Image (tube, rainbow, N blue to C red):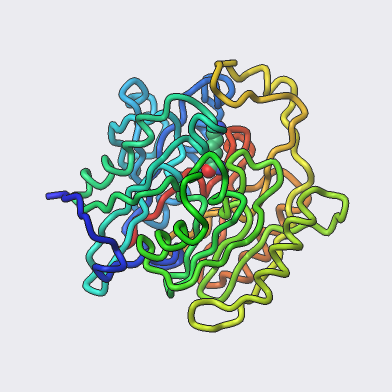
Length: 363
Ligand code: KQY
């Protein structure tokens, strides 16, 4: 039976593990909306299928699909990927899926945050978002896992944890007026501590330039293991990302984690600027209430938007001169994993990348 609990993970001895810890599997959703994905989402569906296939070499993958796309998704996804009917407005499982928490006995529960499409009626990215807002509960029902209903608006892409008491996030995202304008920074931090069971929250000032999420940390920085962070970087002082990454680097380098360790921060140079091409913009339907895709707009491309799975790291590539260096650096930093590059441009055109479309269920 999947119950809704009125306590908190911290009170019950549950914690969010680091993504680098063992997974039971990965959850994804299936893209289809033509006002976010070009050409009726066909290229995006191929890109999502490639990500699911890559992860399924390492651990079980489940993809939730709207009813009208079930047969198509089943045909496009490899047989080892489980396909379940699960309605959603779009396909960002990181953001609308549950945050899984575990305890010392190996039990798993889920945190169901409030979801408002990255800003609700203030600066949200589409309307409505009612189906997305129910995804976390449905996943937990399918898995028969108990659920905590957390009293704040939060997307999974706005947090990373080390599993040992430390969370990284950004002020730009969690203090944004479209999310929890009625809560103070201290109140938000209190909820993060209660629902993730962390002792320390590191508030990085800003995320990646041009990111329509307005500051998701998962495009900027992540834990490779406790005490070790990868950060998107540019050596170009005139790039709008330079100041943001430099500020994050200085901040993280002077901080310690919840156990008092200094953080090691590794820079991963971003790709050259990637702009929406005129034909790509034209291939997206215009719908009132959905953020439009305009030719020439810069996309928030970052190699940090990768996903760690059991024995693997699935990294977006951009057909860019920096791809090889990013993959080689991550392979050096993650010797225990097989680093695999998967083309990320189609996912980026929708507003995120591989990390944004995946959600780990811990073992
Ligand atoms: O987590 C993300 N990066 C998702 C962005 C949502 C994009 C909707 N167009």
